[in-house]
Length: 131
Image 1 (tube, rainbow, N blue to C red):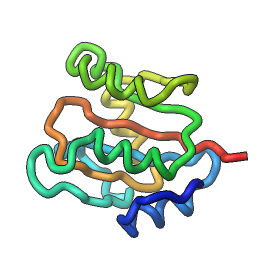
Image 2: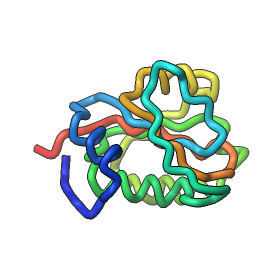
Image 3: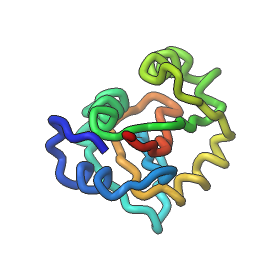
């Protein structure tokens, strides 16, 4: 974990607890958060904050070794996919079906819900180590 300017105490707390290979999800506003997974809801209104704003804030503090995205983002939201991939040089990206993504999100330590309304604006970040 690396400490930066992130001031959301719930997100910072979750990141501080995450160990190597554990997962954190950032989602759009419509993502169905499993009842068994902690939801950190930062959505205020449509598009506030955006998915990318949430992602960028988390990336300032979390060391990521792998990214998981829904396969459907390639055809449904290619512009967003391009912006996501710009943030992950030399980090493996795995694509799975959206149904499998929803199932896997139940294994995440928490899901951060943004105000994003772009289709398939969801990501699972697999934690790495800083040493």
